Length: 58
Image (cartoon, rainbow, N blue to C red):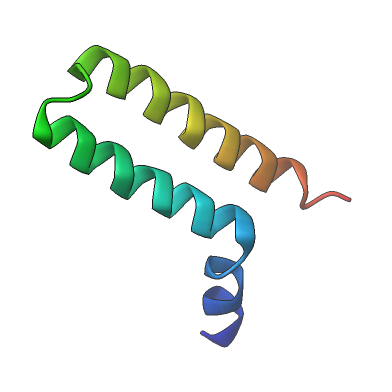
């Protein structure tokens, strides 16, 4: 359990969570169109999971 928490608190994870929260708020306010949100959010999540799985073998 402590290992999971430690991985969650890495810089990469915190940035991903912060971006998710910011884009959700901005989208709900109507500042960003849904299509733009989806593109940006998909890119961030793909980068996060791509680098997360890529780093395990190193």
